[in-house]
Image 1 (spheres, rainbow, N blue to C red):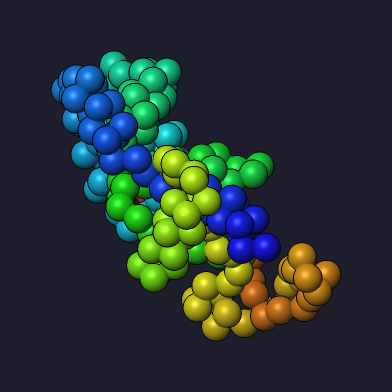
Image 2 (image 1 turned 90 degrees about the vertical axis):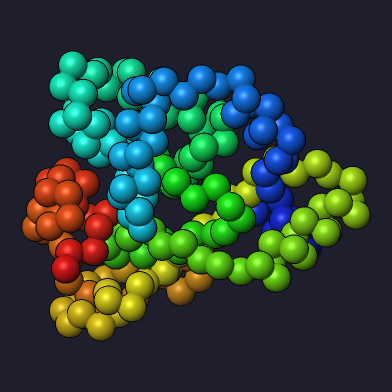
Length: 190
């Protein structure tokens, strides 16, 4: 049913709660540096580990635990959003306005998707049902345009069609954007 689809969407931000959290959160120099680092990655949605490596260049003695604590504080205060994907590190999004995401199942790239009509419809339906929605998290998945154009044979699994042959190569280089070997499958290599 439509309500089930809306439940999968998650919840939409309660602006009053975000404002309360922002007022109670002190933006320290570390938090400002971490927030600036996350914003510099845009349109890429970095992992906390990627943010840590970026921030470490400016604050050499910062620990990974400190970055995680500050990222969590920024998330709770509404300065950033966390994108969770099963069996993968979470991603951080500096955009906190209403939008959705598309994730390429081949290269792992996450892109922002604008759909104001769907957002308005979801908010209206939830309001009519008496729900107080707090956050929204909708993720479409499939293949991005770049991966669809690449040539090589790779089998992928579709939840509706099972295993399918496609024309996609597996990426095995370091990412040219961030040079993260363990996370290079996240970025589209240009």
